[in-house]
Length: 256
Image (cartoon, rainbow, N blue to C red):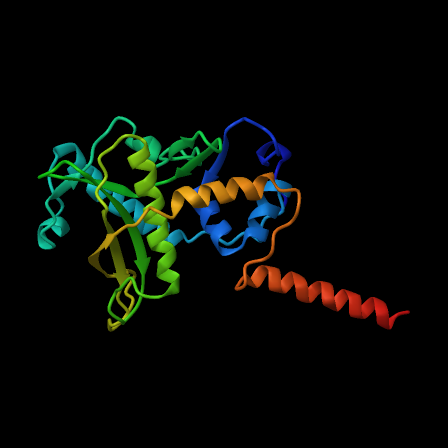
């Protein structure tokens, strides 16, 4: 898929350029894919939307929004002994991107003129010290205990850390403690019967945002470069492209 030229980075420009949380993740995974995406508009193939996950997110947001207006804690907060209530703010709908603007919360990093942005799921406010806890909803279906272990879950952690960094730079008192609210669809039922039953759990995570500032600077350097960077060592997309090019070369040689 190729993007519109107006959405691409132009070297030497002093116009703020949006770099979303997902694009930061792309850069960390593969600078080459990131460069092709942001400089040339050549993006990876689109993935289909996860409509069931989206439905769970929406229903959870509805639950917490009803309590947000009342300034009351959710039953899960009480169960897990989390001293907090859903955070209310005039810009909350912008940060959550309720109107599909594709920006969410953002902070302009003046040194690089990169506008770091991300769309949150929720924010809870600590009732004791008033600090904000970033909250991310996750939907899954597993028989194993829910945990944050594993390489795949490292992406979850970095996602939360970007949000923590953004809100801290926006001037809010942000707690390093964030929460992942998991909705786990149980498969241990006698039948489907037209509904899925979920078990909810909350995992606490202490974020470390020290990597973000140097990464934003590296991203700027990557965007300013006229040379295609090296591929990420584990990038399957670049490995696939390499195999295709090798196959084409072999075919051309065999036809000579």
